[in-house]
Image (cartoon, rainbow, N blue to C red):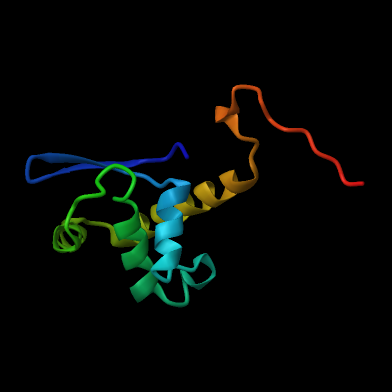
Length: 109
């Protein structure tokens, strides 16, 4: 989860990125990666709003919409959000790097 989108709006700095918890919230709100291109009106809105969850959880929905409307190059923005979300999904099966070397070894018997 290394990609980030950074910008400044009305004197405030924003850093948009995803975490697994942010993706879980998005999924509960109806986000479905498989429908990203077939339902862009819903998917892009949820993806953009979800990108605020990790670092700017308390921002109001109206402000998020205002920021989205003010941003340029929305096609490239949607592509970057999709890449960032996909990158976060890919971490689901990575070994836990925060386990301090205490990964439990398991086997099928």
